[in-house]
Length: 149
Image: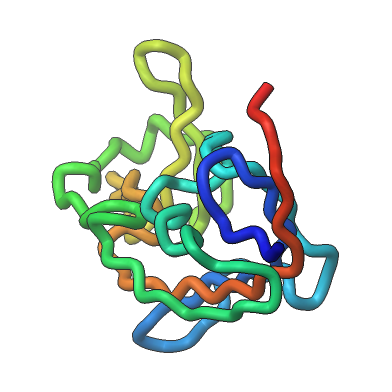
Protein backbone atom coordinates (compact mmCIF):
# COMPACT_ATOMS: atom_id res chain seq x y z
CA UNK A 1 0.00 0.00 0.00
CA UNK A 2 1.33 3.45 -0.94
CA UNK A 3 1.36 5.90 1.93
CA UNK A 4 0.14 9.43 1.20
CA UNK A 5 1.31 12.42 3.20
CA UNK A 6 -0.84 13.28 6.17
CA UNK A 7 -0.41 14.23 9.84
CA UNK A 8 2.76 12.99 11.56
CA UNK A 9 4.14 11.34 8.39
CA UNK A 10 7.91 11.30 8.02
CA UNK A 11 8.84 12.71 4.61
CA UNK A 12 12.10 12.65 2.69
CA UNK A 13 12.03 15.23 -0.08
CA UNK A 14 13.91 17.59 -2.29
CA UNK A 15 12.65 21.15 -2.42
CA UNK A 16 13.42 24.44 -4.09
CA UNK A 17 12.14 27.86 -3.10
CA UNK A 18 12.23 30.43 -5.90
CA UNK A 19 11.14 34.03 -6.33
CA UNK A 20 8.06 33.79 -8.54
CA UNK A 21 8.83 36.94 -10.53
CA UNK A 22 12.46 36.20 -11.39
CA UNK A 23 12.90 32.46 -10.85
CA UNK A 24 15.90 33.18 -8.60
CA UNK A 25 16.55 30.24 -6.28
CA UNK A 26 16.39 31.24 -2.62
CA UNK A 27 17.07 27.75 -1.24
CA UNK A 28 17.22 24.25 -2.69
CA UNK A 29 18.18 20.71 -1.74
CA UNK A 30 18.14 19.36 -5.31
CA UNK A 31 21.94 19.61 -5.55
CA UNK A 32 22.61 18.21 -2.06
CA UNK A 33 21.16 15.81 0.50
CA UNK A 34 17.36 15.71 0.68
CA UNK A 35 15.47 17.19 3.62
CA UNK A 36 13.68 14.97 6.14
CA UNK A 37 10.80 16.26 8.22
CA UNK A 38 7.77 15.11 10.13
CA UNK A 39 4.47 16.75 9.27
CA UNK A 40 3.47 19.01 12.14
CA UNK A 41 6.93 19.23 13.76
CA UNK A 42 7.19 22.96 13.04
CA UNK A 43 10.17 22.73 10.69
CA UNK A 44 8.03 23.81 7.75
CA UNK A 45 5.47 26.64 7.97
CA UNK A 46 1.88 25.33 7.95
CA UNK A 47 0.97 26.84 4.54
CA UNK A 48 3.96 25.03 3.00
CA UNK A 49 3.01 21.76 4.76
CA UNK A 50 -0.54 22.04 3.41
CA UNK A 51 0.81 21.82 -0.15
CA UNK A 52 2.28 18.38 0.68
CA UNK A 53 -0.89 16.73 2.02
CA UNK A 54 -2.04 13.91 -0.24
CA UNK A 55 1.25 13.57 -2.13
CA UNK A 56 3.17 10.30 -2.18
CA UNK A 57 6.65 9.06 -3.07
CA UNK A 58 7.45 9.90 -6.69
CA UNK A 59 5.21 12.98 -6.82
CA UNK A 60 6.64 16.32 -7.92
CA UNK A 61 4.76 19.62 -7.62
CA UNK A 62 5.30 23.36 -7.83
CA UNK A 63 2.97 25.53 -5.75
CA UNK A 64 2.76 29.32 -5.71
CA UNK A 65 2.91 30.67 -2.15
CA UNK A 66 1.42 34.16 -1.69
CA UNK A 67 3.09 36.61 0.74
CA UNK A 68 0.31 36.16 3.33
CA UNK A 69 1.09 32.42 3.42
CA UNK A 70 4.85 32.82 3.18
CA UNK A 71 6.83 35.52 4.92
CA UNK A 72 4.11 38.16 5.21
CA UNK A 73 3.54 41.47 3.48
CA UNK A 74 6.27 44.09 3.43
CA UNK A 75 5.51 46.50 6.29
CA UNK A 76 6.76 50.06 5.70
CA UNK A 77 6.83 50.69 9.47
CA UNK A 78 9.56 48.04 9.72
CA UNK A 79 11.92 50.35 7.81
CA UNK A 80 13.63 52.55 10.38
CA UNK A 81 15.98 55.51 10.15
CA UNK A 82 18.75 55.26 12.72
CA UNK A 83 21.33 57.88 13.60
CA UNK A 84 24.69 57.11 12.00
CA UNK A 85 26.41 57.52 15.37
CA UNK A 86 24.59 54.37 16.60
CA UNK A 87 26.88 52.33 14.32
CA UNK A 88 30.51 51.39 14.93
CA UNK A 89 32.60 54.01 13.08
CA UNK A 90 34.80 51.17 11.77
CA UNK A 91 31.80 49.45 10.13
CA UNK A 92 32.01 49.72 6.35
CA UNK A 93 28.36 50.48 5.54
CA UNK A 94 26.98 49.44 2.17
CA UNK A 95 23.50 48.96 0.72
CA UNK A 96 22.39 45.36 1.27
CA UNK A 97 24.61 44.89 4.33
CA UNK A 98 22.88 42.81 7.01
CA UNK A 99 23.31 44.32 10.46
CA UNK A 100 22.18 42.86 13.76
CA UNK A 101 20.45 44.74 16.58
CA UNK A 102 18.89 43.66 19.86
CA UNK A 103 15.32 44.54 20.70
CA UNK A 104 14.12 45.43 24.22
CA UNK A 105 13.95 41.71 25.12
CA UNK A 106 17.58 41.23 23.95
CA UNK A 107 16.42 39.17 20.96
CA UNK A 108 18.65 39.45 17.90
CA UNK A 109 16.94 41.41 15.15
CA UNK A 110 18.63 41.43 11.73
CA UNK A 111 18.06 44.30 9.34
CA UNK A 112 19.25 45.23 5.86
CA UNK A 113 20.83 48.61 5.14
CA UNK A 114 18.77 50.18 2.34
CA UNK A 115 20.45 53.59 2.23
CA UNK A 116 22.73 55.80 4.29
CA UNK A 117 24.46 59.16 4.39
CA UNK A 118 26.76 60.93 6.85
CA UNK A 119 24.03 61.43 9.47
CA UNK A 120 21.56 58.55 9.17
CA UNK A 121 21.09 54.94 8.08
CA UNK A 122 17.80 53.47 6.80
CA UNK A 123 17.43 49.83 7.87
CA UNK A 124 14.72 47.41 6.68
CA UNK A 125 13.72 44.94 9.41
CA UNK A 126 11.21 43.08 7.21
CA UNK A 127 12.04 39.47 6.35
CA UNK A 128 13.95 39.58 3.03
CA UNK A 129 11.17 37.50 1.41
CA UNK A 130 8.31 39.61 2.80
CA UNK A 131 5.90 40.75 0.11
CA UNK A 132 7.24 38.24 -2.42
CA UNK A 133 5.31 35.51 -4.25
CA UNK A 134 7.31 32.29 -4.00
CA UNK A 135 7.31 29.08 -6.01
CA UNK A 136 7.73 26.03 -3.76
CA UNK A 137 8.85 22.99 -5.74
CA UNK A 138 8.93 19.59 -4.07
CA UNK A 139 9.88 16.09 -5.14
CA UNK A 140 8.70 13.48 -2.64
CA UNK A 141 11.28 10.71 -2.27
CA UNK A 142 9.82 8.70 0.61
CA UNK A 143 6.82 8.76 2.96
CA UNK A 144 6.65 6.69 6.12
CA UNK A 145 4.64 6.71 9.34
CA UNK A 146 6.21 9.02 11.91
CA UNK A 147 5.62 10.20 15.42
CA UNK A 148 6.20 13.60 16.99
CA UNK A 149 8.42 13.45 20.03
